[in-house]
Image (cartoon, rainbow, N blue to C red):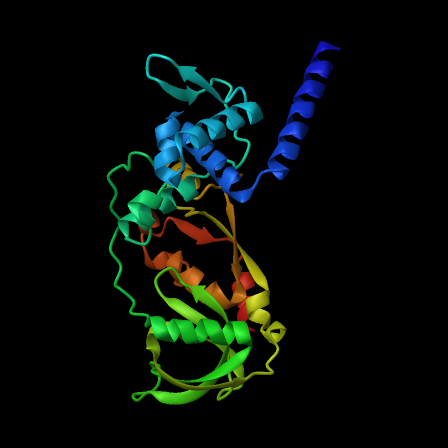
Length: 302
C-alpha cells in the first residue's frame, strides 16, 4: 500500500511538472534548461551564471532559480559555504535528458569557431583537439542559391566540375535536400541533364546563372526517402577482450550494432566505416568491425 501511494505521489508530481512546463514561455524555459544543464554537467549553478549567459537582471535570475526549485525541488540544494546551488543527490532531469553528443558537439563548435564562447553553456571548457580534415570550400552565395532553390522548389543552372569530365559543364539541377558524408557537403538534386537523382558536391559548383520553377516530384527520389539498416559486429578474428572493447566503442548489444542510413548516403557510410572493401584486406585490429548483412548492399546494387 505504501509503495503504491508513493508511486502515485511521484506520478502526480510528474504530471504537475508537465503542466507547469507547458505553460512556460520559450525564454524562461530556455533559462531553466540552462540551469539544469549546469547542474548535471558542472554540479552547481548560481544567479551570476544565469545573468551572464542571458543578460537578465538579478531579480530575473533569482526568479528563474526559484521557478526551477518549484518544478524540481529535489534537483538542487543551496550550499551556504560556497554560496551556490549544487546538484541534489536525487537529481533527475526534467527538461532534456543528459546527452553526451550535445555536450561534445558544443566543444567542437567552439573549437571550430562556429559557436561563440559566450553562447556555449559549458562553464569550464576542457582542453580539446580533433584530427584535422581538409577545408571544403563552399561558397556562401552558392549555398544561399541552393537553399533558396530547395525552399522555392526551383531548378538552377549550375556550372559543375565532375571527376568524369576534364572541363566543367553547365547543367540544370533541381535541389531538394542538403547532405553531409562526414567530410563533404552535398546537395541532393534531380539532374535534368542525366534525368535522375544524384549528389552534387557544393564545393564543385563553380557558378550559378539562372533559375526556373521545377515540377520534379521530390517523393520520386526513392533512395533519399528509404533507409537501410546496417548490422555490424566486431571482426571475428579479434580476441575476446578486443571484441568487447570494440562492442563498447560502437554501443553494441548482444554482439552487434544497428546503424540506419538513407540509401542515398549508403556509399558514404560504408566508406567512412571502412566497410567498402574486403575485410580480409586489413588486419582485424585495423578493420575492427565487419558487416553482418551484406545482402542488404547486394540487393541495393541489383
